[in-house]
Length: 233
Ligand code: HEM
Image (cartoon, rainbow, N blue to C red; front, side, top):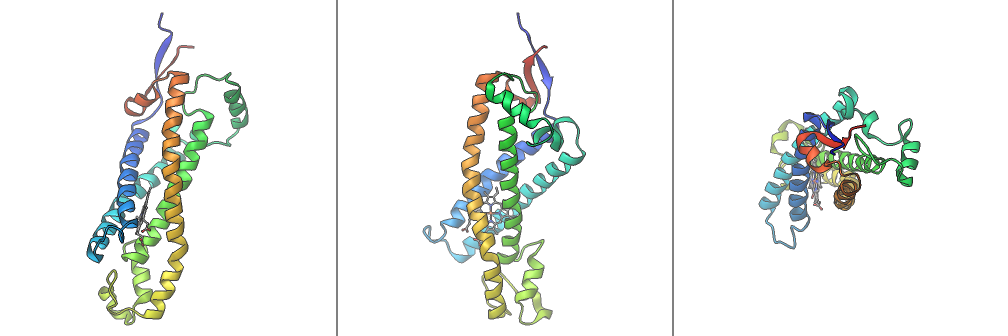
């Protein structure tokens, strides 16, 4: 006899966020790897600027999607809320102990290991977003900080439109060097953040496969349909 029932867990908002996020990260990582190996690949400056511009435009989609998800964490319903998917909320330690002992087989939302992974992914995605926006401003003078950085390096502050990526026109050498020194820790955090994220993603996928084999709750298709297959009681 079938003692399972379909339970609605992931709202349309969560599922949309998840798949836009997956696509954006794949694109960002792929373009990022090409930019990173630009010298080795013999890219011209124009090609590099074009790739960086595309990377930043996809980055905006990634950032807006992430910010909307965080907003939903505060104002959303059910499993959209921070309390439902972040670790270290009241009751988490007990949940973790039961999970470790194997006495909690069913999880409507994420299991405790999943919650820790989601928190780690969110922190690293926020790191990519914040450092990425600083790099977009300091490298190709794109919003939201590009106007400020273009003004900071301009010799003639009345001709900011002359400031272009990788061009020396109207650029004050000293101010430019200062700006490049300022951005150094951000590029380091962006690149190391990328390494960490790239390591976390396969771990996340392995965790999903492991949980699916253990709990048999159709968690992969649940991120498409919204429904998990859970025991009736
Ligand atoms: C998951 C998200 C992201 C990943 C995996 C990622 C990955 C990378 C990688 C691997 C690089 C090459 C680093 C190098 O040139 O040495 C890069 C560069 C860059 N990224 Fe991202 N990135 C992400 C998000 C963003 C976002 C949201 C923005 C801005 C909107 C952004 C803006 C930039 C810029 C401007 C560069 C060029 C920096 C430079 O070479 O000077 N990135 N990214």
